[in-house]
Length: 443
Image (cartoon, rainbow, N blue to C red):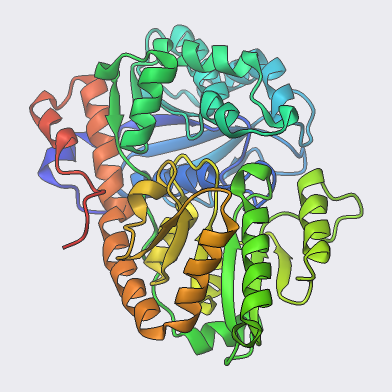
């Protein structure tokens, strides 16, 4: 067990019901419903277990062949698959039909195991609604909640009506804000959004960013990483990783690479773009994957843009290390876990100045900011890093230094302070939650 600082020794033995209703933290990343939230729930739960807390992550069962209880998160942390609705993947929009069944399943599991949870930590608005039900069943168990993404922000950038968050979600998010005891915002931007879009009570919001596993994500010799993933050592690689959906701005990246290829063909010799996420080989690809593959053909970039599909996090560090840079041209990003992982690997990040990316990427120090939906600006910054080795390497070193402050041990300690506040166990340590921001510029 990790030695606990004196300020949080009260936490050893606490039992936490972690709710991730619509997506399992053990799922393969890069799918339609899997991304930064999965990583967050998985790694936070694992770290809390190391610290001596008991964490049960409850998620909806999507396969009746999967054991109900999974111990892959390590000591004192486990994943519990609760049957609720079909034992199969279903659209997120349909999960809401089964929240009562899910809450009843969690309560039944706790009763059968003879467990009493000290607090509930819910993720995404659907889990917040379940948390409210469990709080009532369990006689007032306090709730900490994290949204990860906000429907109103999604709607502000959506250009296709089909991508807009429904009114049910907007109403649900507002209800959850009122129902929970503490909201954890990832960035100052999210705190402001909760205030002016939802009218949230600022006194119940605390800013604690996600963390990064510095043991998994650490600098690896580039030549060795390229050998592992099959990229010739002399080739250059620009990388994107994430869900394949319109708000990620992957079309902007493809257009930017087409501009570089047109203007600087010599630079693009032996240079490729690796897009990690989704299933490019599906017989019936989703609309965004099909659109991006068609755009690649239209812009004559089929020879430099590669769709590699989703990758497990065990091999993902090799792809980061094999890249010269990681690009995140998102239109909305509540935090940007991929950026933080890339920085921990010592890779500069070129990103839109939105959400958490506006705080993680320090323009000109560990990467560059670019305007959203601007292929010209993105092409200029990619070209600069492709052609300026010294700049690229110095930014990579600065990126690693900056990422080190987001070690999960540091983040989990702050989360535990929130738990203590909710349980009335450490009122003298409230000031630690208002300590210096982790987002300050590196020295």
